[in-house]
Length: 580
Image 1 (cartoon, rainbow, N blue to C red):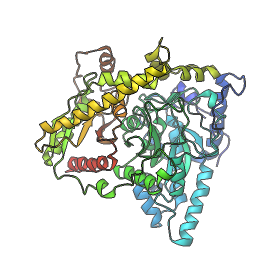
Image 2 (spheres, helix red, strand yellow; image 1 turned 45 degrees about the vertical axis):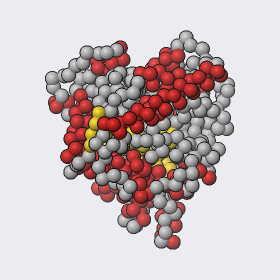
Image 3 (cartoon, rainbow, N blue to C red; image 1 turned 30 degrees about the horizontal axis):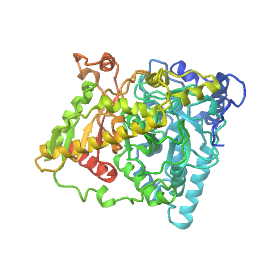
Image 4 (tube, rainbow, N blue to C red; image 1 turned 180 degrees about the vertical axis):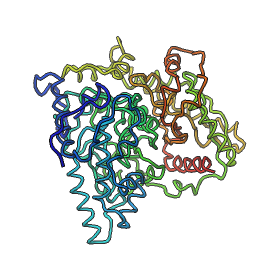
């Protein structure tokens, strides 16, 4: 393997914060009086010590700061067979292992090699346990050789796990200095438990931002995660480590969480598929984070992957193992295969396109891509109407109150324990409650009523589209951007309305890559808009095709509540129309 490596800065000062394996109850006082920078340095050194054991897998030379696209560079240490493996989706990988074309060990080594290079170039991982994964892969290979049977539907599949999801024996620092090394999990989250039973191989945890409540990924322990297609851009957040790692082919499938866009935005900005189910459809117990016990707005667990069918594989697996018997909050709704396969869909679907949410108009590449998808659907015989936006600013104002019921006090208190400063994304969110005290209990009840009233209004709004379709049925799905921009320059996220709106309504949403990567030359001269508000001005001041060079172009499909199978079936219809 390797001699000890002296760390070299690969891209920016943010990469100085790189680094390893660290009860579940977060400490209420600092573990000691060391300065927060020393804690961060210790975590980075521990991570680097593990990485240095795999010196032969590391790049011969780290790219300079002006090398923005590292998506091919991270594959440079692979054999031809390994290149083939890491370009397979999860469904194909499990089939190849089952058919003994590849062993689980072969597959894991290929993804671990890329993971090492991806970390050195994008800073996407937190905890590394390759040897633990390899031991499990060997067990699975031996089992298949002896019995001729796989242990489950994910037999041998490498799966990466977002940092704040509990994984027994590993640290769960969750982007907080004061939790680093103090939150080693004594149990698995329910999703991890099911993954293990299904035969998945776990080998790495991925970066999330300080507080988790951010659509970019940056914290004071490990620093900033960057986009492998353009390192001046964010891979999104809060599951941004997953986005960067999977986009770099360091993982075929990852587990993220989403309370405002945290699966979908990383999927969108990293050119992946990402799925946010409705609350209580997938297991969610066993996560670390602030505001534990707050259920005025609830997050969900879901997959990020490289194909639509892999999203179905993840969901089907979770429910095959009867997640409702492992977690009381999960609804007993088995996976409806015939719905997911499209057997119950009408021949002619109605899609509504949200071109502009009334607050921030999307940037030109997203508008052009929606026009392209619209034409493909019309050519395939489907119906398309315009979606009339429903009070996105009001929805944002409400969900921010639900995020910060205590005025942001718990976040501030947790940061204060170590003395670490708020990173820019954290500060931007906390400023939404600046000077406001915590809501009283009766005030939170009133906010819950506002939430339910908003949801009822949205249901009626959707149902009312029946008067505008030729079938007399309400539209089947909404198609829209996931954010008003492509992957954004660091610390510039200013509008969540295309993602958080659907969390407020608890509607399932799937992100899908559709337009390749941005060719800046196709958007000249530069389009401008007359801003309607300060936020739109900030977003449109960013628009320059060169700024977003190489960024993936993706869209989002939204369905009715708890219709996850139908959402994936409709995505299949959209993709077939686009390929026709």
